[in-house]
Length: 144
Image (cartoon, rainbow, N blue to C red; front, side):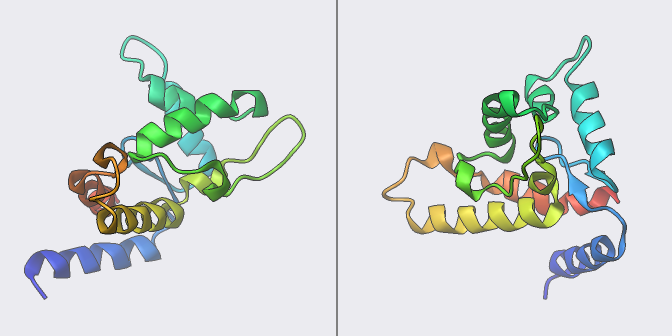
């Protein structure tokens, strides 16, 4: 095991033991609760340095779902199918909480990256998350 792999393993163990359960898929900032994650998205999506992708990630009503999905796809770096998202129901609102869970984001980005790499000759590579994106997501635990 290389030194970098050993350090990453230690950081991943620290993440598992922490109370950080959510990640912003746009900037990889970690949060202990979903309310803080949504607040981060809304606040980063406003003001002079507004980020439309963060703003879209902060949308939680059913009518805003198409914009949320568009922004989520941009944030994670590939076009995930709606049926692959763990969406909750509710009256007037739809729960997107699980879409921000660290396990879901990392597991699915890794799974889709592997699938797309295996089919790289048959697939438009613009839909594959870059190696830099995958490495940044794995190293996001450094922020804890």
